[in-house]
Amino acid sequence: MFRRREPVPFAFLAEADRFRSNVTPPPRQRSSASRIAGQWLLGLVVVAGLVGSLIVGMPALATPSDTPAQQSQAVQGR
Image 1 (cartoon, one colour):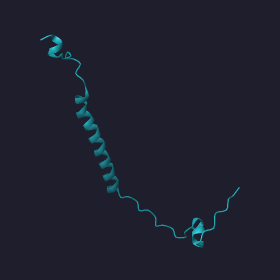
Image 2: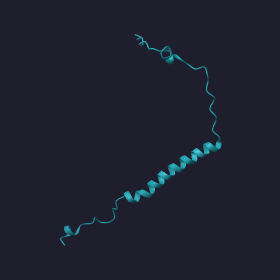
Image 3: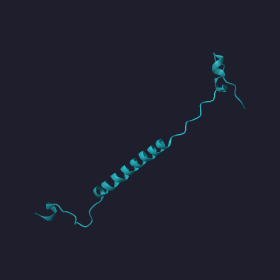
Image 4: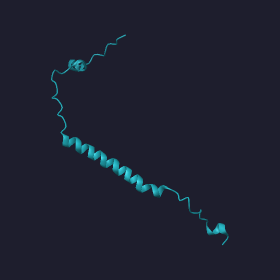
């Protein structure tokens, strides 16, 4: 059921996967209100830029349906 690992030349390598540190990392500092507001503002600017570019670009992507289709002069027989 459990396979034994192959022997390794260095004992510390064999026990490295079982090692756990007894040093706890320092607690994370809470973000300040100005940092949170700045992150929200940056996100809002990015979203507004994407929406604005979509709104500006939509007329270029739309095909005009109210104008008749143009025909070349060869089709008209001229």
